[in-house]
Image (cartoon, rainbow, N blue to C red; front, side):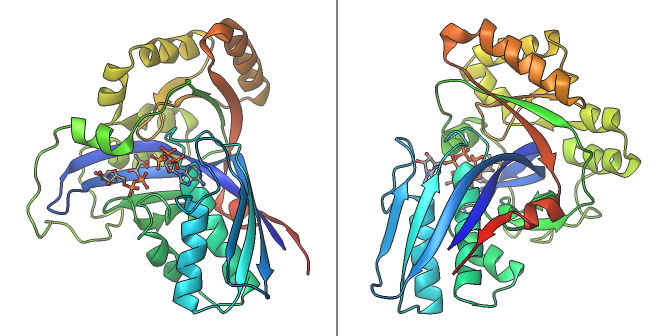
Length: 316
Ligand SMILES: C[C@](O)(CO)[C@H](O)COP(=O)(O)OP(=O)(O)OC[C@H]1O[C@@H](n2ccc(N)nc2=O)[C@H](O)[C@@H]1O
Ligand SMILES: Nc1ncnc2c1ncn2[C@@H]1O[C@H](COP(=O)(O)OP(=O)(O)OP(=O)(O)O)[C@@H](O)[C@H]1O
């Protein structure tokens, strides 16, 4: 049995360059894993070929639509496995929140099956298979800090971002990623695109949050990283849910150094470099918003090596 921790991601930046001929949006993002995790426990069943999934949650039920199930089916098919698998999913990351919880569960499931069946797939192979199931999933294979381009699936690892703390606030509603992208009304891009499929830091447009973030990361300054943060999708989701603007203001008033939405939202992030401060802000916010049903969580940024070592239990 393998017990994997599947970390959530946050977007330090998200630039939308335009809409592509295939309907996806060309993005440039700096992504970061944090230590808010789901747990995926995977074991082999040598008697049956079935996939048995248990756990999950009301919003991510343990059925054939679950990304964990779909990943296990993809591995079974690709590796032509004559065996079944049993998986238990413990969901802690809020669903449809802009934190890529489902994507991370999928990446953890493939990594576990790769080990349990000694498939010998390298990260690149797993990333390219997982890109079929979602644009955010390849990043979660390696985690840490990375530049993501294309529709989000083309990755370039970056040196670890600074160690800082994040207060994550998830209101009691979700945001639909396709609807948020659609509402942007982004300009159509030519086909073929004027950039390579997988952009390196040298290829990305000089304007935009991500270009500034790459420069900030090189300086190693926490303040420069905060100043470079930004998310093009905020203008849609914050317009739809004005309470998110108030939430950002509240986080800043309580002492966060910066506040921003993650992904397509609606989770709002508040940043600080002190753990005690993060915990006290979270406590005050939870009390002040008790009647609003917000979920308030605290997490720390998680580097790539740490993310890699997050197979916590291994037996049989
Ligand atoms: C908002 C982010 O989470 C930021 O990290 C991602 O861009 C979304 O990644 P994801 O949830 O893995 O998205 P997918 O499952 O691949 O796509 C869901 C839908 O979102 C829209 N979509 C997604 C990614 C992208 N670059 N352009 C898009 O237009 C498409 O309508 C797509 O059908
Ligand atoms: N294991 C899973 N965990 C969460 N959601 C899942 C899972 N499997 C399937 N889903 C479906 O995928 C959708 C998006 O899930 P997820 O929580 O990853 O979204 P998200 O946080 O908005 O991600 P992103 O940041 O990529 O937009 C949900 O609406 C849910 O129904």
